[in-house]
Image 1 (spheres, rainbow, N blue to C red):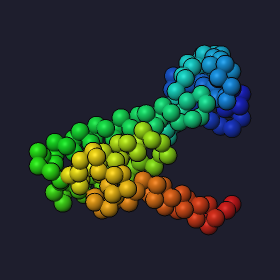
Image 2: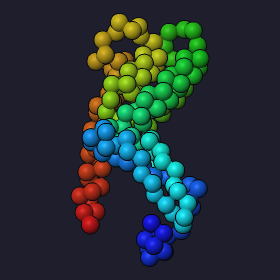
Image 3: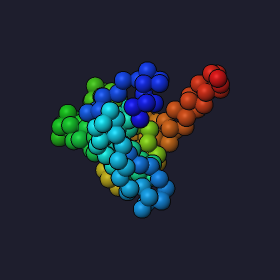
Length: 163
């Protein structure tokens, strides 16, 4: 590893660098490698974070999605306090809520549950309100439409810069 880094003029820090194994076969993915950098053994981490995304050994993004759902739940609790005890939220609170929805684009039911909860807070509806009505009542696009728009934007960017 040290030879490769010197060859490509890289200067990694042994204290900040970690090793991890990714594999679709669970028994192979739990294998811990002994990787050395300048004579120091790099620590092994099962769930490393790279560019804000928590990875797991099978690349299913389960850990990241669980963290994202937890963040949404915390923000929903804060929004409940901001909205007060009356039904529905004020226009200012609705702007904050819609900002909360922007950052999540993960295709999972855990995240969608929290997004639905946010839309219920905005619209002041009960839990028995049918899910298809939540985006209409809160005036926010559905998570599926938001994901499709983000995917379309990414595909357009890739096609534009195909090199």
